[in-house]
Length: 104
Length: 158
Image (cartoon, rainbow over all chains, first blue to last red; front, side, top):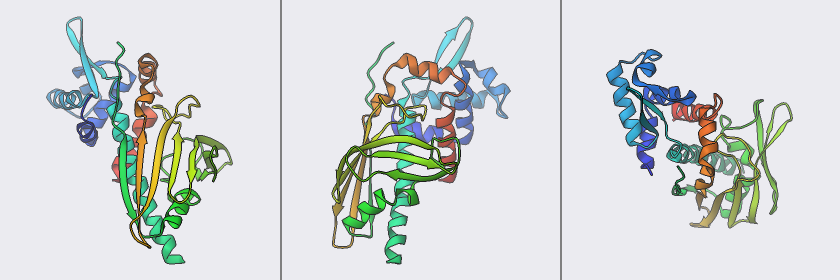
């Protein structure tokens, strides 16, 4: 199980999030990911490494090439999202309590 | 490959400037006034969120076109101390009547005018039941898209 903070941190980078989203439609090689993004192959490799360390993606050999796919066990991503979601929601809730108390 | 996944519950604590009764009331009756509008499941724009004030009550969202989408239900209704909601949205952000993750909210009086609200969202591993199903969903074009889009939105706002 990947560290949740690392999953959250990994997805907080917009480019890395793009790399991750590119894998939604299926497994891709580094070159295929780099084709659609304004990022160099080495940069994509680096992003994939971070995502892999965070447990969000995994890789496997496919013939002579290596392809990357979203790790289905990466519930860390869901948890990370919920974690952030509740931060946003509870902040709004606390603000609403303050606002409604002032009106009374 | 099957593997048991046990993500830790999400735990949050927030302190609000109101007595317990008011804190509970704003959380439940007033949920439509604070629930992030960007986070909803209906096709049309979100109008409001509703928690029916009783055990077994519905928790749903209403869109501006009048359509209603279930989010979950009330498992424990114990004002002003505690509220347990069933969050029944799966990893695809769709309502699933067979999925129950629990959102346990406790309202603890810190003083006559301050309340500490502790929230725990647990049983997240149930979202991972059936790894094959999840894998199919991930491979589908509309799979994780919705969730990630939401994540991106909130990350941008943060």
